[in-house]
Amino acid sequence: MTDAVQIVLAKRPAGDVTADCFREEKVSLPALADGELLIRTRYLSLDPYMRPRMTELRSYVPPFELDKPLTGGAVGEVVESRNPRYAKGDVVTGLLNWASHTRHDGKGLRKLDPAAAPLSAHLGVLGMPSFTAWYGMTKICQPKAGETVFVSAATGAVGQVAGQLARLAGARVVGCAGGEDKCAWAVREAGYDACFNHKTETDVGAVLDKLCPQGIDADFENVGGKIFHAVFERLNNFGRVAFCGAISEYQDQVPMAGPPKMFTIVQRRLNLQGFIISDHVGLMGDFVREVGGYLKDGKLKTRETVVDGLSKAPEAFMGLLRGDNFGKLVVKVG
Ligand SMILES: NC(=O)c1ccc[n+]([C@@H]2O[C@H](COP(=O)([O-])OP(=O)(O)OC[C@H]3O[C@@H](n4cnc5c(N)ncnc54)[C@H](OP(=O)(O)O)[C@@H]3O)[C@@H](O)[C@H]2O)c1
Image (cartoon, rainbow, N blue to C red):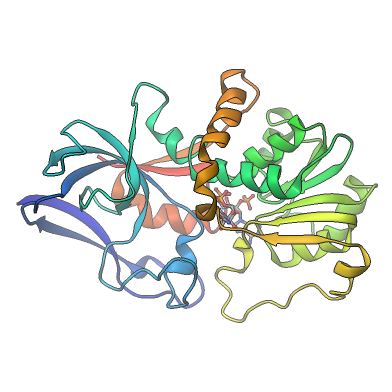
């Protein structure tokens, strides 16, 4: 038996996520069966897709179950193994419980070299969010020198990499973020040509007209809602939209309507493509080669927010939905 601490889904949110949606519990994990391993969580990734999973809506991933631990991308250390593929001391990444320890069947885990990079980087710039940015930007947005690319949530885990990849391709890059400090970092460190604060700019259309006088050739869409509507109206002929997420809509109880004048898609020969990064795992090697190379050459800047302690995960997650995090949000566990 191993004593563990875990956070379970106590109730499904109606509107904004509240603290009583979570419950922290102490549990005793039973002894391992053949093929299982016990993993101690080191870092837990908090991601926007977890919000839709808290509801009962069927999606590309099943909903979290009530009274069961939430799960998420994580890095952990094997503390006991009855699985021949893993030994005590191995550092692995994969889906783990929001818990100090997870009993795991070993499926979907990947061993990491703990000396290769800081462990939390495997959840950010070397992990799923950065892979998402790379796929959406290089395969869908396909920026060209001189084009204008827009990135919403420009300093988030995905957006910060997406914007820099567009800049490295020679495009003019404009973003939006929720604060003056974030916008300043986007321009000064990440090399955006401009970034506006969506929390203070009330007329998104007017600010886009000012910052994107030649229109928008490609949009990396993280936010949806009124920001996307304004971007959509300003897409140029043959514009591309990598529809990555719509975080501004995740807590809406009444679904928001799409942009008016959908015939624009035909008139301007637009390509709007949604994607889910887990469909593209076969390209992970290409991503690691390209983005790993940029990192090694000092061409990519990254930010992360590290929250200390599993008990802080619920509050940190609610903060992510308000924009409190700056860059990739991870929880350091134990
Ligand atoms: N398709 C896929 O496979 C895939 C994979 C990963 C992520 N995603 C999506 O990509 C998007 C970004 O994810 P991430 O991991 O990079 O998250 P993140 O940027 O680290 O965190 C979310 C950010 O969204 C912004 N935000 C929150 N509410 C907002 C609102 N109402 N209006 C405008 N901005 C708001 C906040 O930044 P500000 O301070 O700038 O407002 C917040 O920090 C999300 O939509 C996510 O669901 C999709």
